[in-house]
Amino acid sequence: MAKVKYYYDSDTLSYRRVEKSKGNISKIIILSFFGVILIMLSGFIVLSQFLKTPDQLSQQRELENLKFNYELLNKRLDESSSVLSQLQQRDNNIYRAYFEANPIPEEQRKAGFGGVNRYSYLNGYDNSILVKNVTKKLDILSKQMVVQSKSLDEIVSLAKEKENMLASIPAIMPIKKEDLSYVASGFKYRMHPILKIRKFHKGMDFKAATGTPIYASGNGRVSLAQRSATFGKVVYIEHGFGYKTVYAHMSKIATRKGRKVKRGDIIGYVGNTGRSVGSHLHYEVHKNGRALNPINFYYGDLTPEEFLAMQIASEEEGQSYD
Image 1 (tube, rainbow, N blue to C red):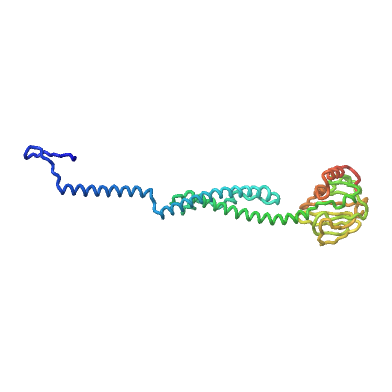
Image 2: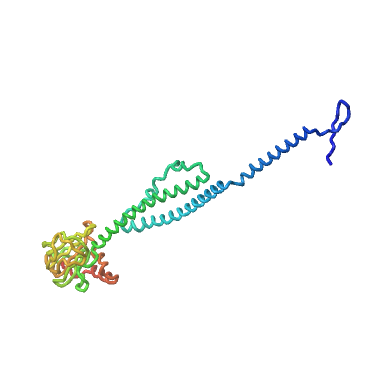
């Protein structure tokens, strides 16, 4: 049962019962209706923050998928960068060192990525930091790959050149081991057998019978093939890459000036011509105009034990023939 309400009437100085009028009831109904509408509208606004339309849900899934792919790409870029870094280290410390090429400086490999506003066009997005980070890594990786690709092209070219160099460097003894009697004199100071003065011997003397074949110790071109007062019948071979060899005191020359020769070709025969006191071959190796000890260039012929034995023999004071 509804409560009865009263109000104080100052005219009659008494309390009078409040009578409900139709107008008041209408106002109450209208206000209640608008209150309900307001409550429903507020609820809809709140729920709209959590309930999305199918299009909104599709866009959200697409954005989340893109973010996931960016994060995955970022991880793969880190892995690729690590692999490239290892390749760069091998390139500088092994490949370029082996082929006598200067290492590529770190500044050159990572040049061209300065400037604070380089990626400013990517600002203003929800995931700007992630997108900028991935874009920067991709740019750096692309630049480094271009530098590394050019370096490998250079290495391939150097390898081809190195192959020619390895074939040209004097690498065998000019007389076969089975034809050799002994090493008469090595790369050192010793008494000259004819001049009777102490003089530096710039090569090695190989004692062998007259007519023993003499072989080119590396690929090259004959620059001189003639008879001289000191070396008798002598052949000079220019091997390129700064190397030159000399074969002296031959009994017979089996090549001519300007001819291309390969390692192992016969270029003459052992003799006793020129300033010589016995049948032998005087052999010299030069690099960039400086005489080198020929014993260091027999790695194509000698075992470690044979090399040691020859080294000891070449250092002994034995018979000198020129």
